[in-house]
Length: 325
Ligand code: XMP
Image (tube, rainbow, N blue to C red; front, side, top):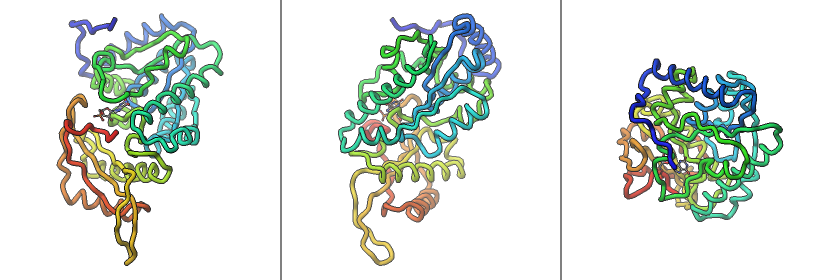
């Protein structure tokens, strides 16, 4: 049975209301958890960031976070999680570096749903194995938000941490389960998290794997990661990062002929995708000015080995989905 939001529940649209929610939530969490321990999978996404900060306020060292770096994260993402949560907030954070393990499991797998299943399954395995090593854990916290429980997602096998509760004998704690995304962001701000942690683009659970269509190789994954970093940097510089809902690069498993220094090349190409949406069920394409596109193209072609073309995806959703897989 899905728990529905009380119609009288006031939309949290100010820092004052967010502070009230935090106060109430911290009180309830302390009453419920007492001196018990809680674990949380901290991905670096807005929802888990906010849950981590909220629980840290409520129970401090009794919260244990596990950050699984499956090698499919954006450039510097794990570093930022560690800096912000372990170094700055002093959180109890276990960092799992399992890139090789994941890339081995994914080697030669090109079917999109198969890739998603492997990543989801292995993510849960890694988390569960690590959780089993810890003694005295009673609760598992999750960053489930309201649309996660009210929207059905039938198009792709979505991978969050949905399979975790059934694999672990922990009681579930979902402190933001009745909130919408904008409210979660407001709570994050009121908790003092930096904008960088609160205003993040949506990022799929299977990460860069879905932006590396076909079977994943380290080479293409690295091109996706580096071109994504250039795109983000340039969008930041020209203010588009505040305007555009989601933007990223894709590097398909396909090479084309090009020329460099008078020599033939046979290399991959990069696709830029920038879309606007409210709830991800439909999306429109952002019109990126050509001068900005040219600057991004020049940087990508100059700085990244292994590519000889840059393309722009102008497909709305429908008919395309936002991600390519
Ligand atoms: P699509 O590609 O289906 O994506 O139009 C809609 C939105 O969802 C994100 N996405 C995911 N998010 N787990 C997630 O948490 C996933 O498995 C997943 N797949 C896609 C996507 O980035 C877009 O914002």
